[in-house]
Length: 233
Ligand code: B1M
Image (tube, rainbow, N blue to C red; front, side, top):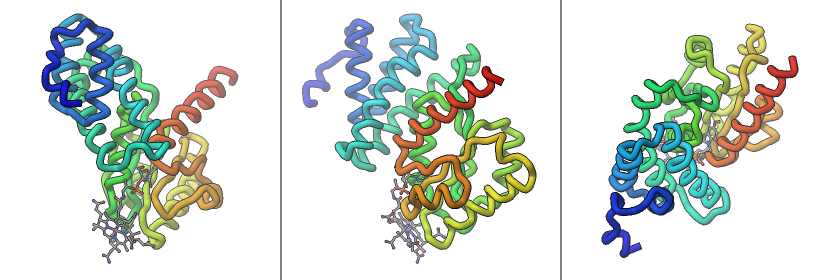
């Protein structure tokens, strides 16, 4: 991509600019993404269109290649960071225009666990896919999750655990949701290296997500089901 140095983004037409932004996002070029976003906004693009067509479109390619083992964590973190740069410009504009988000997720690493790289990646990819993400950080006790779910009127609870000693805490959170009669109000997705599908099922989660790309796809699927249920009922 050495030719990229010679490309003047402002000289490209919209279609070529978006294609170039896909490449730049893939290559984790944050400044170029920020510049591209600013150019599209100056050309009169709605912030939501910039988000979905230029950023989410690019991130979909990154997510697919991550899932297929073509891209690895460092590259995805760079792409996510570039995306965050673009999103930081769009965030206040989106808030002004009231553009719809696909859904709202509260996510956090469970009590006793301070690993947050994977959770952060999931949060970024979810934001990239158009979800609003409330990140509770690390070492979250059940009360913190429940308070946030209620306060934020979230659709999805995402929990992360990287230790075999902390993953059982996810069941504590889900059991508490059941006890409080709140379990059916939320889609519960879990992830983290030591988990697997069987564990996800055993603790009563809706789905285990192997990685960030799967988390995005799973969240979209479950949100569509939720909307279908709501419109049927
Ligand atoms: Co720790 N650590 N660590 N560690 N650490 C592991 C997890 C370990 C497997 C290393 C090993 O021994 N081989 C091991 C756990 C063993 C076990 O439980 N059986 C371990 C240990 C033992 C420990 C300590 C106990 C070490 C010690 O102090 N003696 C300690 C525990 C601290 C604590 O939490 N209380 C500890 C500390 C640390 C650091 C602080 C040094 C650092 C964390 C830094 C940070 O996160 N800011 C760290 C790191 C970096 C690791 C390894 C090397 C890498 C984890 C990582 O970031 N992976 C890890 C070894 C490993 O996993 N290979 C290890 C990259 C990340 C992108 O992947 O987190 O799996 P991952 O996330 C993926 C998916 O799992 C999924 O999507 C992500 C993106 O694709 N996903 C979700 C994750 N969360 C999700 C949530 C979702 C959906 C999907 O919600 C919907």
